[in-house]
Image (cartoon, rainbow, N blue to C red; front, side, top):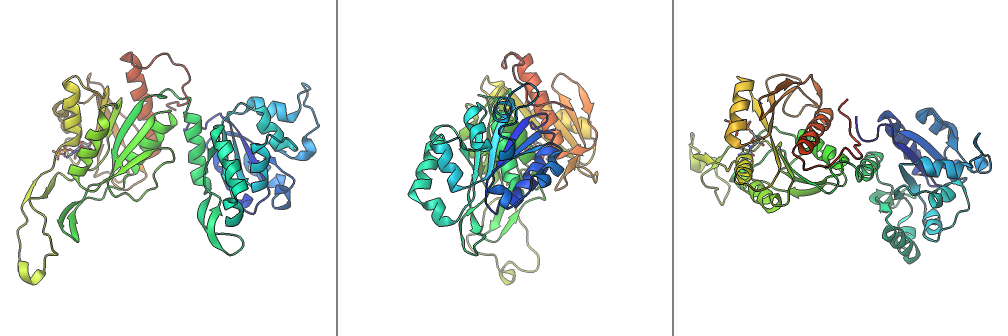
Length: 423
Ligand code: CTP
């Protein structure tokens, strides 16, 4: 499960039409195991009812009518909610509520709770373009950012007025990611850097043709999300991928194996953990044609001469053997036969701590599917087959194993505030 499990999330909803999407966000949060307390402003109630949120959160939805009703302990709702919160997100937040928060106003249950909490604050503005661009709104946003608020969006697109412009609320999936990022800030990898490669590389033959493979980048992206959730400064060096990059992850897009190696070497010096999940093309054409190759010119048959690409993981593994960082080096082994023996050979040859082996002929593992069935092999010789799991669960379990390793090496200190579990 993600770092949302068991977390107390306050979802503030203010009066904008985007609040129909907030119900989806509340549902997604609840599905990931968070306890979601929704607070509606009276303007939000013009658009959506408390019942809608209670139905998806399974909890009371708070409104201004509850403001002066103490609980059994005598605590008023804004104090009880503010104390319990791990994170507060307001989605959508109107220009009006932004202005109130920037000025410390506390005139309803939501603004009072925000003033009373120490929890981190995420704001997802949604409004007409002119309202967003107004100097007053921009100044308020700047003030809130300077105080540490995370402002996500607004995005460009269709607005309820029929216009197109900046002002759409960020999508619930992006907001969910932002919440995971913010919760991760106190995770065990806080202050550590994780570098990950993902996706396929493309090795050009001519300006319109290239050699590649079907990797989607899903496994590497899931690993980046898991590292981010654990609080790491996460950098994803990726080839062309068809999955969205997680919020809070720095990306370095590349095309060829050589570019991927250069990007990795530029990042590796201060990296603590390196994970190579990319499906790097092992060969590239010895030379790239400057112009498109014409069929009539190359003839009915044609020979393409290939050469080896650099081994990115091997290069990092050998750097580490020479006493450089990273502290932990992890590889993947995609095999079609002799899975364990071939993976063990790669672990030794590339100087790794861990290798994640998968049989890519299995329908539930490997390229472009959402699940993976892997066997994790450690340098010390342990071989652990894992069941078929969603790629994001494989990523989270792997991160737990990496964190354990860093602890055993004495690099990570005590089990202070783990936000990940292996179950
Ligand atoms: N890898 C890499 N650079 C390469 C090739 C592979 O960094 N040029 C990494 C992959 O990201 C993966 C691991 O090495 O983590 C193993 O990749 P794989 O393709 O299974 O192995 P190869 O080294 O290519 O060996 P072989 O072709 O013999 O299977």
